[in-house]
Image (cartoon, rainbow, N blue to C red; front, side, top):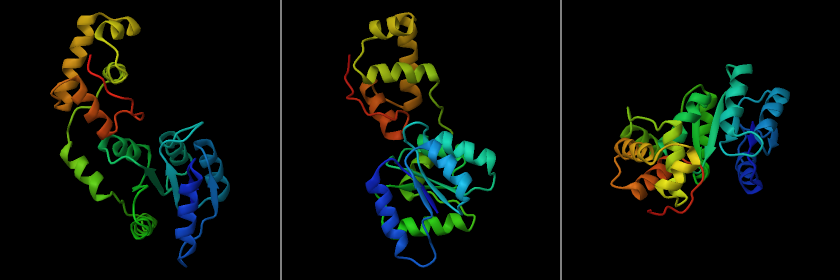
Length: 208
């Protein structure tokens, strides 16, 4: 098994859990997406645990590139988020399972064993979120830009200037965003987007 995560405490925790069971072995570790690709190519592990948010190259791109080269690779995405958006992206990138970083040791081992047998695994919390938003519209790249600016406390006027669009266009994007996210106002929209995983960072939401 290969573990790719930029936090040593996560890697150490996984290593400790795996060394206690006879049917698993940690053969390699790395701290970024490029390393995940390189070490997967070198070690050819049965399973790779890949953090979604790493420096140099994130886990989404790393998994996609690993699957391009090794179509049968069995990959498990590591994440702190219970949002459906990140989970959907992870599966599209090639993950066979999702593992929350705050999961129990037994759940982690069960997930690894399930994926090693060719099964898919989704934590209950994420599966519930996926079901709740099944068929929901994604935000467009421009809508996401607008929402990220709102999360940083930018006014419509400043957002318009930064994106070289009119204020009316900004208002139109915000209207579409609130409809798609079923939000009551712009701050509520930011909170929903953060919870679902539309935005990786978590800036302080401020109504303007």
